[in-house]
Length: 363
Image (cartoon, rainbow, N blue to C red; front, side, top):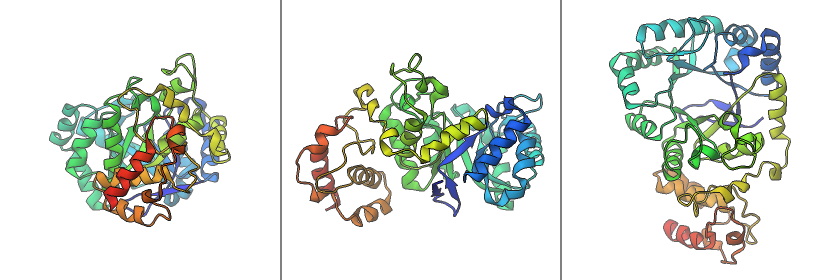
């Protein structure tokens, strides 16, 4: 397992986390097997936005013994009174739901308390006006919540909450379909979404990724917006390459799904290479580096994707990015303009010209 550190904390989070929404239908025995396999494999990050109430007591039973070694995303707005998932901004219902979730999970604290699924400006206003946000901030002061976070599909709303400077983590839907205007939650243009990822990294706000497979659509050529199927491994790598991303929350139905996903850590890079999407890139996204490193190897040894990432982050206001750039053994000014990367880039980026621009920027 690989881990990434939360910028505003010391938590080291597994790059593959577990989504719970489809797990409840598996039954207690299968859920137990999946959770035991997850922990054994080094997964330590679990999202508790479930489609039903069934997983909560199983999580409590299986994971209570290793609670200090794992992290929960608990959502203020998800409620399970009927046994099925419901969404609410009612403060009393939210408090009862969170108390029930903590009881079922056999814990008395929340690693990441989420403002749950706020996609409209009115939702944010309801949460603020009703006192839910104030309640969460009080729980953080008391130590019950370690970090306040936000779940949204809307870049504009995410930007507004970032302006409020109240969150340490953003749960956001990231996949090639959404980033390139395809799918129900493809909200915002390619540039707008990319700018959000860069802002999160620049400001030290981590990202946990939901809907990495677009509900399975990207995995099936018959329904994929691109007319071709991607693999789960390509989708995971795509999300992990985005600035700010700490973990991809892969939804599983059973232990077999998890065993298959864990192969991600055994596969060679070429089996996780998602550069095929370059052929589907819309006009407004063409010519923009996505850090896929398909241009490598560079004859001069430049890590072109990383150079581009540090440049984009520095422009977004990340002061550390400039320091990281200067520690590279080969920087943009080492480019000899041979054109090798230009011919290989699936996103039609003229990297040799970009290297000159980056070298001038950093002086």
